[in-house]
Image 1: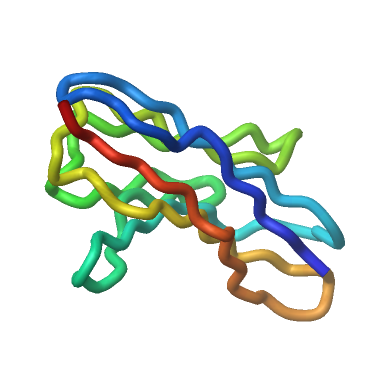
Image 2: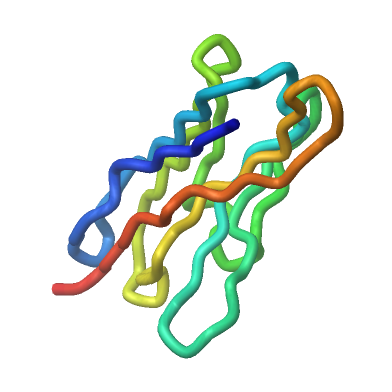
Length: 119
C-alpha cells in the first residue's frame, strides 16, 4: 500500500509565500509523475502543477511564474513553492502521484491541505 502525506498549508497574506510538501511512502517500485491539484469551494478540482519523471513541469496558466514544483527522488517527496499568493489561490491542495508497486501503475491522492490567502 502507498500513502501520500501532505504538509505546509496555512493562512498567508496576499503576496506571501508557502511551501507544500508531499511525501510518498509504502510499497513503491517506481514513480511516473507527481503533481498538485486544488479545489476551491464550489469549484471543480483543477491541476496546478505536474512533474513527470524525467520530464518538464506543466503548470496551470494561473500559476505560471509564481509556483514551482520540484521533487526529491531519493525521498519520494514533491514540493510546491508558492510565491506572490493571491486570494484566488485559496483552496484545498491535493498531492497526486502515479506509482507502481511492481505490478501496475496506480493513482494515489493525499488527504489535502488547506491554503488560505487573506488579509
